[in-house]
Amino acid sequence: MVRVRIETSAGNVILALDAKHAPKTTANFLAYVDDGRLDGTGFYRASRRQGNPKFGFVQGGIASDARRVLPSPPLEPTNVTGIRHVDGTVSMAHGANIDSATGNFSIMVGDNPSLDARGSGRNGYSAFGRVVEGMDVVRKILAQPTGGGRGPMRGQMIQPKPIAILRAVRLDGAPRPTGRVKPWLIGPTRWIQPN
Image (cartoon, rainbow, N blue to C red; front, side, top):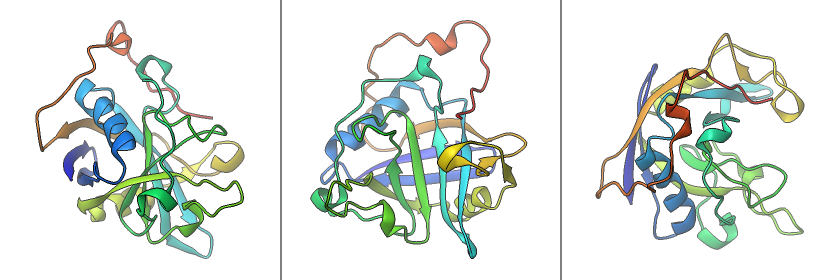
């Protein structure tokens, strides 16, 4: 396990990432952490369960800021890793292409088995760790007012602005920055909210 502290404007969340069972997804996330690519981003989505809004998931990361994107790892589905989308699990977001995960991630509040691989071409998402401290902060983020958004994110964008991710720091092992250019540090920065 490799621990990462995510420092937010709502408090700190500490993750334990499972490098043994989800090595490629963990390495991808750590590259974003070690490069500082998550610093100055935010938690922008609170997806609450209909009928029981205390459960669902929060989503954060680079949103659609292409200046921060690194190459995507291949999907590591839950039926291979054995890591399920239960309360406190951290998982990589992806688009229509299952191998398109970048620097956006979700944290489960309650169990979300619909995000697990279920056969028949339903590959789900790459779960790769869990919250070990700060679930109270995650629940606070889930309870934020929401609106806006399109498609599956309709009505789920945190309003009036995202919860800031001030910085993300690796707590175990030495940081291994990619050495890639950091264009988001050049010129003025602004939050780019996803559609």
